[in-house]
Length: 319
Image (cartoon, rainbow, N blue to C red):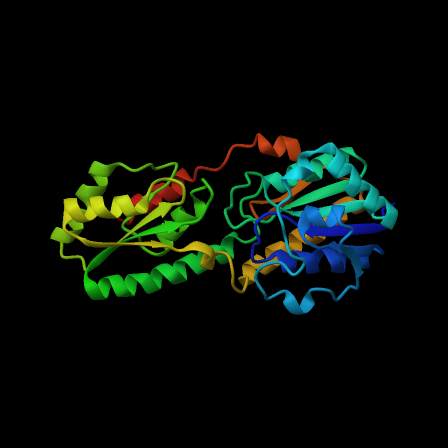
């Protein structure tokens, strides 16, 4: 029976990570475990930077964005000798299991540690929603709300000046933030990996909106698709719209996690401890149809990403 469980956050920070800590820690103590937090992600494992916490840890930070226990990237963790040092440090402290909150890269580290004798469960912590084993990741809902808030404000200025704005949205090759925001904010055009730029169609659409005397237009572009500054020049030249570019950047990642974010993160954190209590490791947790599931980490990499054809259809219908 596992007695001591550690928790770390890895990769990019995401709102809701602190709520996941609360869910895991409270559940752990309810089940008679000793709970530890690891600071600075996998880096903390090799630097012995972990400590035992009480059942109230992170409660007063649950409504805060980011991660209370910090995060860092450690490419060297791919090396077995580096992971071996982490395992030795954990065993010295008697920590037998680990909850890893992060993305796909973090999941692979969790799988390798499981193979080396430290049972691990991964939780999907990333604003990008790019983990196929969960309908929604920890951080996505809050980030989407941040994006919508920013677009709404930008739209007011664009309307005041009869302008077009091309806005770049985060997502790391995943289109979900752009697609959902496009629907929620009534964007005029979206460009994603699933719907690449069709320059002729874009120009035609924006010309039609100008002819209809629409007072502004919003074009959303998922990051890593194209150079939005070059697109701005093309739009201005071909359509006559006074056009601006805006990269939202890190404002998308911070802020108070939404109520739904907190609920889902707490559920996932609690479920991870329950799985470890049952001796289950090398798996990742996901929300599918609002129900908690777990998948072997390696098998989860082969799951097909939801391409949201229904949402694209909705976007087209409301344009």
